Image 1 (tube, rainbow, N blue to C red):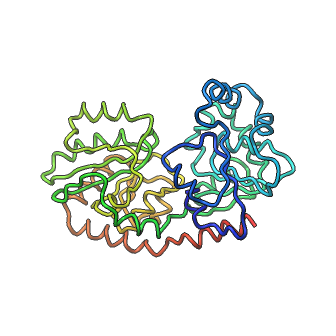
Image 2: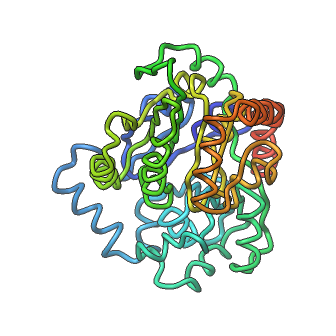
Image 3: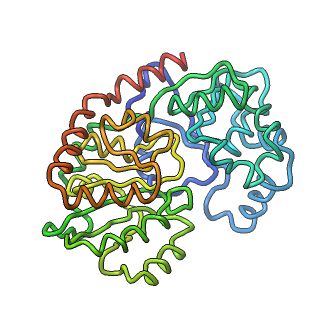
Length: 353
């Protein structure tokens, strides 16, 4: 999402510095093509010093001292904590500067910042967020959560942008995985983590194999649950039906060739994957959690499922009932006009000043 915003930002109005812990990752080249200054806290190749620096930052030093050490202090008019956790905690410790925080997930449903020990308790996290001049949430449900449970007042919602021009260009590129056009193709996209619910999806795929319809499921993404999911896939004998090719830099050439996107997430602040599928006119079936519910407007633009049995039956219907599948397609196509990168980035620019 940050990459999309920076691609469309008005650089006549803003001069941007991006502070990263490590200047690596799948999107490394994309960021370095932008007219921004990138500051890496822990440069790659520092060896023992890099390991020591990591421990100093994440374990040993008080957060205010870390901020004084690693955060650029000169020539910055506004600081933006673009992700929850350490980034937010770090910038919250800065005083007498303008600060904005972004919140992408429901921290009550998924209290990962507490589980990872970034904050000792909820009260300390609330105190950190109250140091910011503005908190931007990616959905109205996340905004309500921050108001009701964190007691914040200076909160607003700006939906995550999708990059329409990038999608249009990349969807026409050659598909990087082999897709069997003679079967019903289903895709799920996201990090391989427990909240994404892929461990619930696999038993449903096993159950769907009882149907006469030939199908294939593609799970695109990488993460710490890969080994557990591969083990589950093997135990359920799904090797011929489920493909997990890992992170795909261009998912759009794959997504446009899918009959269905499924989202088994237990919790989502806002689902870029669902937004991109709807933009491409791909039908969506999702578990009913805050982000997807808002994107699909309850069920106006897709199917929301209250439990795993409902999730299974909805996917089955899409596979075997032609009229239901066509209805899902039509609902997805109707949502396309909702998305506007330029409008979203303009909202962000106005907020940042």
